[in-house]
Amino acid sequence: LYGRKFLTIDPKNTTQTCSNCGHILSGADKLTLADRQWTCPVCHKHHIRDYNAAINILNKGLAKQ
Image (cartoon, rainbow, N blue to C red; front, side, top):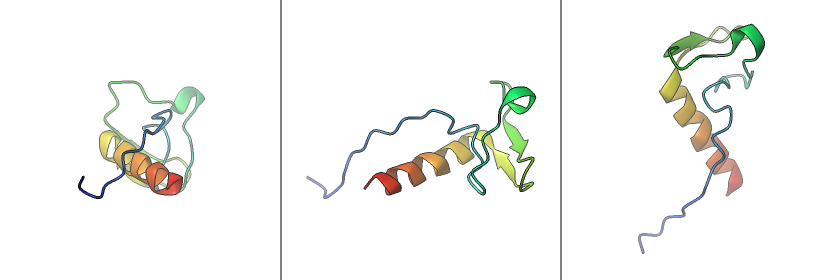
């Protein structure tokens, strides 16, 4: 109707993946629900959890087109 596509995206690891370098947190570095901000141990980019997840979901959707 509005010329838009609806895609479903698997949200797995979208909060745990650095949107800058792609590093996935694991082990002791893995985030808990209380962690709202974090810094990537590889590229040292500071992330706000929900904003980072939104970027990762957008990138997955654009790659899926």
